[in-house]
Every structure is written in structure tokens, then in C-alpha cells.
Image 1 (cartoon, rainbow, N blue to C red):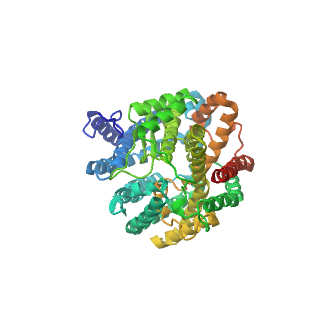
Image 2 (tube, rainbow, N blue to C red):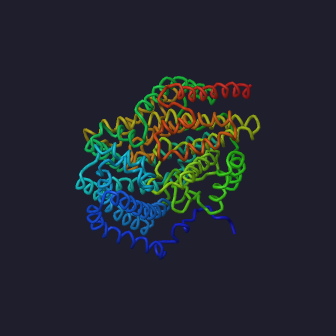
Image 3 (spheres, one colour):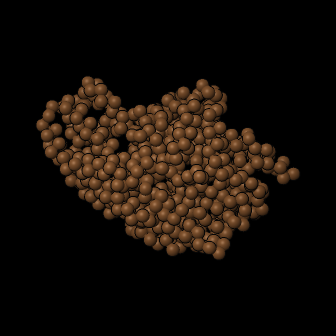
Length: 590
């Protein structure tokens, strides 16, 4: 019997009829109906009881809602066509949304306690939540009234979340006509990593054609999501959604500015690399987008799923016993859903399931070098989850910029391992693939950041149609890639390919990827210098991510993020690698 390449969710529930699932749904309903009286009774208690019992109730709400939401969302993510998945996902979301008002009430009661910061030291539970309580105190100026919060919570499933679900349904079911047959759009999209230039070009053209049928409805989705995100941020007293994202990211504007200005200084060097690579590939006008992942020469990588898993186990074992042990568990217990199929959402993600000390991972695996790196990336997210699973339930959220730390650290591990394991020709191809990915994390993410800024500027004045969105994307890509791209072959539908624009609760989920790429590159340089002695510090850093600012987390590794020096060192290391690669490739061609 062949090994299953689909994940198993049985450790959560065995299905919607599982008595444990039904019992938890009933418990959620009972919790919902009892919260009003609980809040009224708690308000009459002494402050010490309000603090302790309020936090215990918040833990109960968070734990129950998260496990039910995660299960239904995971089920939906691999089969958006299943009516039970759609129904249960919406039902659970509605139930959980109805509790938001009471969560706000409980937090309001806790935060209204006189001399709260002093009282945190007198209760061990409260003491464990000191960071988030102090953080919430600092955010009080952005809170709405209970009634306003309730209205936003009530309309959420039929507004932001509905448009997000529409995105997943349209992209998950979209098909592209390629090579005489209709294929899932995600399958054709993944052909950008194919070994054949002809395949890449034809797949790109089929992909572009496929977007035409879904572009207009998705222009409504992205316009509605961004309009509501902008209005809600202003309603809460933020200057704009970027200010909200920075505060939520526990990241200073000075750090973002230091990183962005450093990138802008290095953009011409990245463009020079792309122009030189384009010429080596036979293009005189910059790289056409369909060659953005192209390698110099024919690439014969073909990693089966077994090959991928064995390779990751081999190289993770040399780095961290904890990382190796978790990866083996993920493989043995089927945490990973590999193949593309109808109704499955595109791309890849990882969800940490702290209450069962596991994670679940989606990929759309296609046996390429990029796929093995993607699996390593998502297992980095799972490892990050493992590092924080001992935190109490309300302390398990790390901010967006640090979310990509372990994942991109893993990418560095695997790219470097692959480069060492290959002969000279294939080593060049591995380095080329790594540099292509880094160009995406720097140039493409910078473009996505600029695009989102321009979308927020425009939606203040009204709806953006598909043509307008394509025009804004083209301008953003040219601002970033410049003459490194062939202007006749620009992927103006990038606003459809990236799920991050359609995440209901998060704006600007782009610069964290650049942060993660450059931050983890700096961490990996320290690992290369210090060896195994660095790993305990690295794991301590990951454990600290849920209860510290990004600047304080970086300080554990003796890094100052608010100054350009660190960012320029990381960027220069990429440019140095580009120069080395181009010299080697010239020798290979000779």
C-alpha cells in the first residue's frame, strides 16, 4: 500500500460527526450563552478576582474557538467545494465572532483595574501575561466602544471574510488551458519552476489568460477588503493601515525605515544582476517575467516526496536535534498535505496547533527544487510553533515580521546543503535558485509593498477595477525591478497570485517576508561562524518572539535593527553571492 501524501487531521477530530467535535461545538454554544451573566457577575467581584478569573475565561474562549476554527479552516483549505466544509467553517466563524464582544468586555474590565501593572506581580497567571497586558494598555487609545466592536464582529463573516472566501473559491477552482487540456490554475502556475523555458513561457501565457475570467470579481474583493481595512484603521485612530500593522508587528517605524532605505540603496545592484543574468540566458531587454525563476542551463532536479523528506531529515539532524525530531514526527504522523487537487487552495502555509503540540502544512508539491525549499520553509514555521508551545494560550501569537524567521533560516540551511552536495554544474543551479528566491524576497516584496500603498491611496476615493489594479501593479514592479525586467513581459496580475492581499485581518503582509529574509540571513551567518553553540541562542530567540518587540528579540543575537548597518550587511552578502555566482557561471560557459 502506497504512503498517503495527504495530511491527517485525526489528531484534531476525525470528522464533523466526531463526538469530540460535536461536544466542543456544544461547549462553544454554552459558553456563548453564559458569557453575559459571567461578565455581569465578575464585574461585582474584587479586582483580584476580575484579573485572575477574567484571564482564565479568556483562555477558555481562545482555546475553544481556535481549535474549532482551525479544524474547519483546514478542512476548507483542501476542499473548498465540499458543502459541509463551507457550512461548518461559516457556522464556527459566526459562533466565535459572537464571542468577540465578551472578549472585549473581559479585557476592558481587566485593563480598567487601578494600578494594574503593580497587581500583575501578585498573581502568577497574570504575571505570565504581563507583556500582552502592558501591550493592550498601550493600545487602549485605538479601542472602540463595545457596541462598535459588536457591529464589526457581526458584519465580519459577511464582509471581509466573505470576500476572502470568494478569493479562495475562485482561485482554488480556476483552470488554465495549457497544452490542449484544462488544468488547475495552481498546477499551471507552478510550472514557472519547470526546467524548460518553452514550458515556462507557455504556462505563463496560459496563466495570464486564466486570470481574465476571475479578475473582475476579484477586483471587487480586493477593493472591498482594502477599503474596509482603511476605514477601520482610521475609525480606530490610526494614521493608516501601515501604522496599525507596525504596532501589531511590535516593530518601530525606525526599523522599517532603516530596512526600506537600505533596500532602495541596493536596488540598482539587484537590477544589474538580473540584467546580466538575462544576457546569459539570451535576453537583451531584461528578464521576461516567465524567466524570473529560470536557471542558467538545463536543470535536472526531480525530488520525489520521499526524496524531499529524507533529504530534510538528513540535514536537519546535523543542525538541531529538536528540528530533526519534529520533522520526523511531521512525516510519520502526516502533518503535510502535498498534492494539488481541485478545491485545494494555492500556495503553501503552516498552522501551529499548540493545544495538541503539532502543526499542519499545505503545499502544492511538484517535485522541483523550489518545492523542497518550500517544505523546509513551512517546517520552519512548525519548528517555531514547537518553540512556543509551552507558552500559555494567550501568549502563542508572534508578530508578522518574526513569523518568517525560522522558515527562512531553514531555507538558508537547505540551499547551502544542496550547494555542497551537488557537482559544480548543479551547485551553480542551486545558488541560482537561491538568488532567484532572494530577488523575490527583496524586489518582488518591495513591489508588493509599493502596490499595496498605492491601492490604499486609491481606494479612499472609490472602487478599483481590474485594469486599474493591473496598471498599479505594473508601476510597482517597474519601480522595484526597473530595467532588470523586460517591460513587454510583466506579470500585472500579481495582485491575484498573492493570497496576502485577501487576508481579512492583516494589511501589509509583505514587508515581513523581506524582514525575515534579511534577518534570518544575518542569523544564519552567526550560525556559520559559531556552529552548534549558536543553536541554543537561536531557539531562545524563537521562544522569545511572542512576548517581546522585534528589536528586543534581535538583541538576543546582538543585532540592532534600528540602524542601517545590519540590513546593509545582509544585502551586501547577497550581492557578494551574486558576483561570485556570475563569475562561476562565466567560467562554466567558457
